[in-house]
Length: 227
Image (cartoon, rainbow, N blue to C red):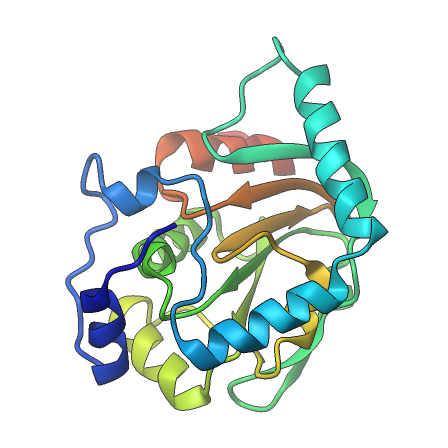
């Protein structure tokens, strides 16, 4: 996924951008490929961690996603960019939020969980974030638990970004990228849908318009709460 010099410059200077997630045909929301890092230090950090953690598990996950796609052809279609994967136990996830409180994926046992990896320098992440807030408002925490994970940024960077585009969302902090490396997203943004027993069933690659009917209906059906 390409990023322009203007995007990098706008991110580093803290300039606010107008984001309209409901704009039809928004280029970033139509992309299915995840964003790649654009800051040199973040690129070196994440690439090195992803390289170190590439293992049999990542190859197996990719194969299962491909086989599952073939096997489910002709069944109910999934929203664009959502991939069904064979049941896979979710890796550990335990991080501090911006208030220093520790949160764990184990705390979400009994509910479906939306695990989302992101960074403010990623263009599709910036477009997608307001739609996640609106999706959260539409579904409510009792229906879907949301665990946002910021990758390799400072609290000041995250606070400035979220306060501008999604002030009601909270995020966990992964300052050294270790947890992100364990989960092995194929880029940013990337979302995993984890069932109440802690197993991954779906993955979303790239920015998705989560507040639109196809995605809201899919999540309601997934959690068994159809209006």
